[in-house]
Image (cartoon, rainbow, N blue to C red; front, side):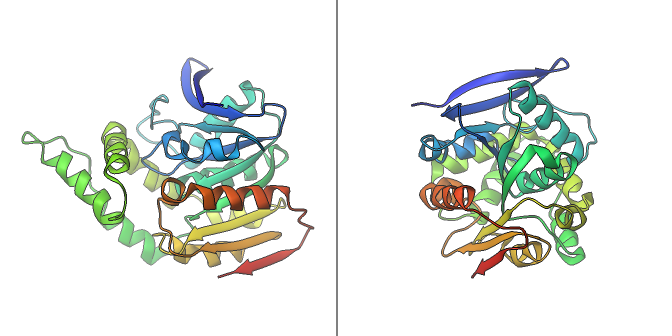
Length: 272
């Protein structure tokens, strides 16, 4: 079984998706981080294909999906993906979101609660003001330089973030970041403006909050879990922000175990 790709037209704009698995099952939708694409799930998807119909869309502005307006919100991104999934025939789904994908997952579940059966938030961006200001300080307008120095700057930034990442994945992420350009900066600001905690606290479906031990958003996991009504907290030792690439087997095991688990309303469990 192999991953297939297609485009979904939403009012003259196209969303690019990857798919694999048993189409008769409740779909599992994977939402990627900024500035990646559904490509970050290509090692994970086949590991889940025997249990789920796995769908990994490219968020607008990233990968091969359409580029949105110069300003947009997390809700804008969520609605575009929701529309595409409905056109694909998805009536209800499981959601997995990593970093920005987690922000979009919460927005989608908040706006369309009957659409999401269960949800996993990996490295959820529940950010306090100090963290937001720190991240903003590192954001600079995307500028193409005459000497190509911007190419090396992106390469070095991703290498610093994950020194153990293989060179082929670094290259993929650099190319995706360069392709996204200023859209990546806008996506970060959209996440900063999202009322993430308020939306998460309003959800009634089971939610698993997870993070790699060394994830850049690891400190947000426990805070996010405090707003979850029913679900669990899972910290995976030794893993970082690129866990879906570097240890897809561990992620697959977490997804499979939680999605089949019978979580009762108000039931909460945690592990650190």
